[in-house]
Image (tube, rainbow, N blue to C red; front, side, top):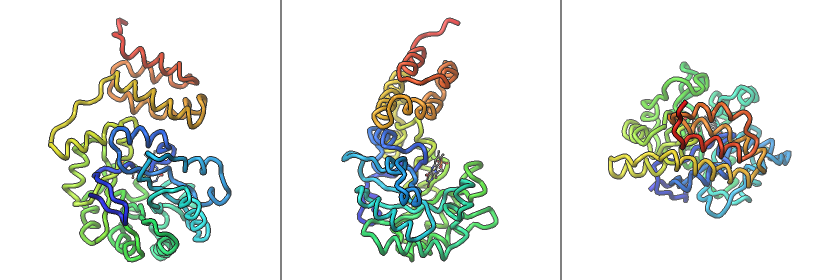
Length: 323
Ligand SMILES: Cc1cc2nc3c(=O)[nH]c(=O)nc-3n(C[C@H](O)[C@H](O)[C@H](O)COP(=O)(O)O)c2cc1C
């Protein structure tokens, strides 16, 4: 059982915060296939202050979307505390603070991973968050800013002292973005000095990857990020693999198509058909990875504006090709 403050979840695989991806539809599809804890998309504290409709819609949830974490991005304490207030009222179960986002426009503002260069500021933010809520506060960090500035072990300890209930660590420095391998040895080092739970992130694509993360680092759970996009099955598969050492059968093409259309339908409910279909394009390559004939569907993707077009294109996958 993973216990983060008073949030208790029986899982070793948590659905990561994924900007532009982890909306209510994505979370509900993931939960249907076994995700027991999920995050909203990253919420910019400034956008909450200015009542951005887009950011407010990121807080849409329902009674089955639980337990749910929300992640705040920011650096100005009053603005962050205002966001905390708004987010708490939406009924989430945990608040994570982002000190991991590597995107240029974010770090230029001194937010996200840039805060790894300012331990005192980050500690102060976390202390204030802890002081102003009864919800568990967690922090997502990276290994450090660059390969020469790896400071996750000290940073994690500092954040534990500031009152964080758990640490999420993406074991790549900011300068590495998403390339190369994540450093599991570093996660092991961070884990050995912490008393609060540590959740490891980086290179989680299969149930065996989750087992490797747990075995090599001793961390309490792993985050499913890129490996969960177009692959909600990873949650049940991992659960089964960790319990039995055996792999479940992968989904058939027919099952994949059914889930894709179900996912799109949930997005249509959220955004309307035109916006949902455009946004769903992002998921198509991942859902169809490794399927023969998928290239033709992907080629038709740019033109897809309505659900019917996706349905027709996917129908070609079920038929033998004689060309
Ligand atoms: C499309 C995308 C969006 C992401 N958005 C966020 C985010 O909003 N907040 C965050 O803390 N991490 C975010 N991440 C990082 C992931 O949560 C995760 O730490 C990272 O992808 C490493 O895991 P992986 O190698 O298994 O994908 C994002 C990653 C991707 C690929």
